[in-house]
Image (cartoon, rainbow over all chains, first blue to last red):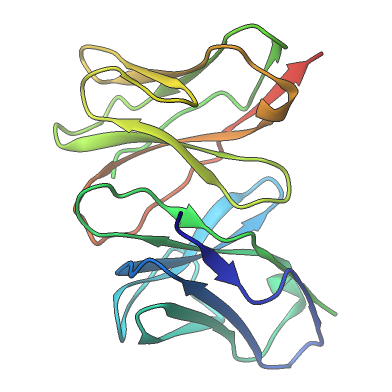
Length: 113
Length: 111
């Protein structure tokens, strides 16, 4: 089975800190995604990457950046964390072509104080 | 990708079939219907997908209307563990494009 691993389940950071959320998948998937999920707002796409060093903005990229230096790893970066970035962050990966199911990690609950 | 409309919430008695509807009236000929679910505090999990024909797997059945403008996910014998938010998505396969989730349907299973 595909495994998508997010480095932390819970994270607490202070306003203004630089925050790295890491995601690793073990099935050689080309596509990787970062979503955030807030009560009443569902899953919202922040960024996605369709290959190494390639990235595309999702619906809410402001305040975030991403890095994809290796195929298996997709990092979400909060350059200067703010309280409105307190949220559940979900990483997902997908193979392009053929069976295109999304596989999700367990999520990182980030609290910015 | 086509937009989908789902009821905000539904409930179903344990042991009964749960039928979750999804409207996708603007679906294109090459767009698939995907269903995912998210159990509390977990990441979403793939359930099933289809293009035109009805599909069945070990988790659920997917019924797509002939005009493809709507579909129904069927959980044949709902259990308490099926309590989750269910998302219907329509999209083109083989597309390196973003995948958008709507608000989904919160399904509650009554004992």
